[in-house]
Length: 261
Image (cartoon, rainbow, N blue to C red):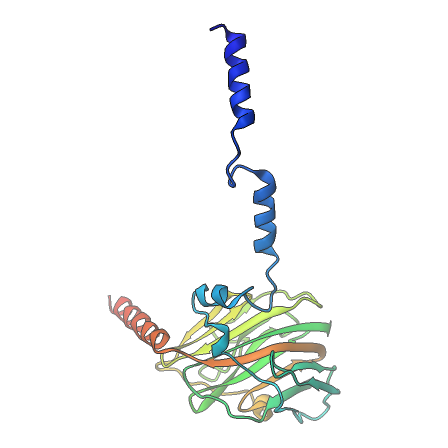
């Protein structure tokens, strides 16, 4: 068979053979678009949420809706609270002098729980989210964008605030962009996520936790903004499962063994 005939037969075979999904650029682009357009507020389905490492099925979450009240820092800006029993309240706080915020007046877990929400700064330059939450009988604040707009950390650890202790780091937050925020408290540690990326892992053993005095009015659970306008939504909590607690204990034992080496 001459070269021309061979090329003709090969071209005919290619035209009759369908591309696989992986080889089809149109299919690949469509699949990539479908994955990348999942909303910041959560997974596209309960099944997807359950498959995410560390996440819980949607039915285990409890939205925090109707029991938010404005804090009284002194110099507070106006606060707008819109209850939503399905997704949790939508909250807007105006610029305070220097603080504005809200407090949850319902029941709050002290141990073995997770809280998830979204927040954003809409105007201003300092921290838009100071999430105060219980750690046993104590409380701390997860600060996003403090000390001029970029410090992230926990206040207080061993008497040092978020700008001073070893967990502090710097991250910029553009005004108007929603940030997904998650905090977990188990007997071994405090964990914090920003946009599903681990931001802080703080062990509890041999450490002391407390609040800066300004945040006392946010107990037991509260949100505050410093010299800026901020919005919060999709606020919800859940209890940790036995499997998650067992995993946390095992991880702590591994860390302890590594520290002893």
